Image (cartoon, rainbow, N blue to C red; front, side):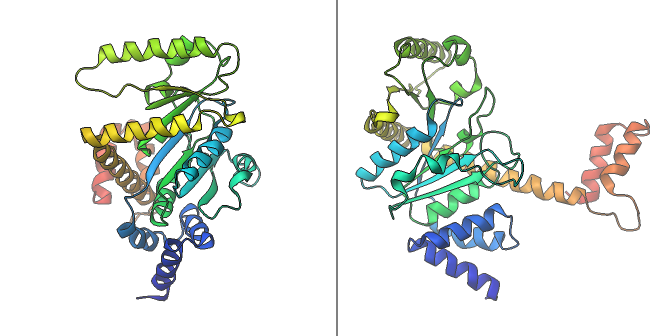
Length: 325
């Protein structure tokens, strides 16, 4: 084994022993797209597939970070080892995470059974960072029973977290706008569990009522057995409702296992990850200089399309043929 591979192997072994520094180093290698990334993925693969992945998403201001904090506490009381990937917006100056989520999770800073990592989106849309799938594998291999993925504040279409999670929690709060309008958003269509935070505020009952109505409409459109997302009211700032959320997550997991949905979701997740890696490799190839030609393949074909010499479909066929794909 090469020295490079030996180093990665040692890091993975130390991560599996629960050493936080080794876990952090592996995630850094993933985020930085290190040349060792393939070695890392290869070393992690035999030790993954055990963690339950929970996604938390919702509009800005609903209390995602506070809810994550109290949910971690509830999971720890249940004896679970917990990893948290808190995806923060990128700093416009450094490109790094703004660390807003870490500030709200100081309750668990000294707990050896909790690993919290902020990840910068670095311009990636969809509410998560591009490196999140591989970072999940690191925490899975490191022995986390549950990994929570908290997204940045999302809008109507930024629902990429559903492709990563076994169970997706959608957080809402009273006073966040018209409930029916919100229910048209794609974000509500991905919920396995609805969490209405700040349920002690005026309007909470109306929000819950609107959600129940939208869930009933969705069930009428489906055929066969389907999961009915529960609605769990919480007051995260007071620590209320977290155990109820954990119970809802476990109920959803039991339903998925009994209906074969858990394996199906994980296979779809793996397929998406494979596809994303393959597409990225193709994009890298697009920039390669063709042998015997001073022009890069893609710009050259683009010029021909603009000039009307070739249509874009024929240009795409030529590009794929040239790449040997």
